[in-house]
Amino acid sequence: MNTNAKYLEDTYCFQSNASITDMAQIGNSAEVYFDKTIFYPQGGGQPSDTGYLDVNGNRYEVSAVEYRDGNIVHHVIGLKVEDGLIGKSVVQHVDGEKRLKNAKAHTAGHLITHILEEMNPGLLPAKGYHFPSGSYVEMLDEKRQGNSEMLDEAMAKLQEAINAEMEIKAISSTFEEIEKLRPFLARYVPKDKPTRMIAIGNFTPVPCGGTHVSNTKELTGLVITRIKRKKDRLKVNYEFT
Image 1: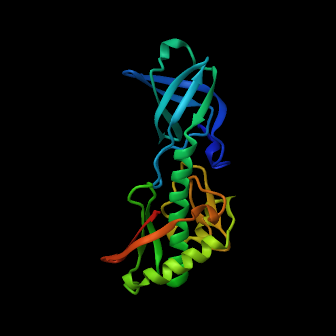
Image 2: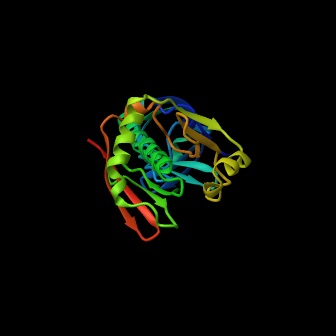
Image 3: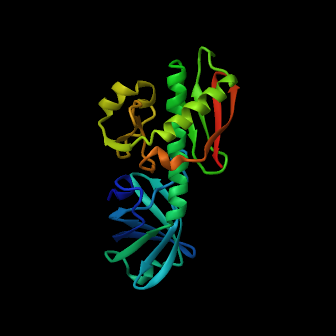
């Protein structure tokens, strides 16, 4: 029973119907599985969505969501297996404010990475931490050509990209396509998750299963706070002001 990941289709969908396919009781909470979900599970450097379920007019908090063995598991406080809800339809409600905050942080990491690659083609995206607090990306720089003096130039190019109001699109892709466009990143693409790429303007797309805003204009207020070398990597911290 693989869950249909509807969050991949529309970042701005915060409410949807879904049917419960299975449940497991864990103390006062239940691990709930659905046929489809708009809740993003934590992973890829991005925190999970939270929100609540409307079950027969009653509200139950979704405190965390995770990806496990090809399925998306929702941790729901107060729901009980004995209530006989398997096969029943409920309404999923995602915390929209938190979703968009997370999506902005994730898209920001991608855009900064693209700009650094453009400035120095020898840099390769290696890691992203897209939690709204403490956000950063790391670029692999085996030749150690990059340096912390890039900050001013990177900020200027970042502002240009935001002002250009670039469209951001999700593209369905095969593993072969990813391997061709992003051979370095292809080795890290999970084989048990949906495959797609995210394209920002004319930058080379990257494989990603996270949520993203639809236009760079939504990244107004984004600033790079520090670029620091860490052995063979550049660590780039960023935040919204």
